[in-house]
Length: 193
View 1 (cartoon, one colour):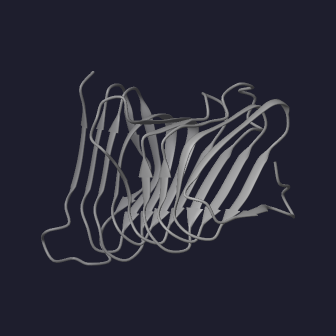
View 2 (tube, rainbow, N blue to C red):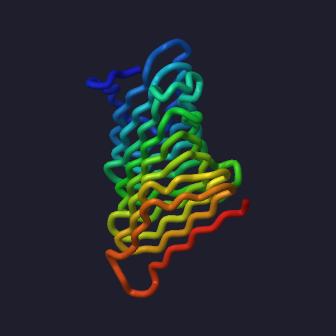
């Protein structure tokens, strides 16, 4: 559905798309969109929205071989995550003109090998990933609740705190909130196991 160099252009409110064989999903949405169910059995998923994007169900884990990544982005508005499942070898990249957030429910999850996320606002996610590269570039905190072990390869904020809780071993390679050093942008890292 669509192609890397020729995305399917849409102006819809809700997307349900399924690729049952081999093939990618590449969509360029003009406005806001709810990805109600976007699933590939052997293909990547790339969706850009001109407004807020809600990832209700996005799944490329059918063939979990590090080639079927998920990329979601907005040129205006937030990314709201309900369920993004790339598996344990495929990666997820989220790029938001606003915030990246989730609804606080335990079932709300980003599952992937590596999660890369960039937002002008805050980033709040429940994850099941091996590593993260996260950046809040203007103003907002980063809050990650990881179910297992995690490697924080890079976590930075321009003006906001960092809070990461892991259900297993936590490796902190690079965390920085020093862009705005005013005593309120602390770093909290913790494990429950």
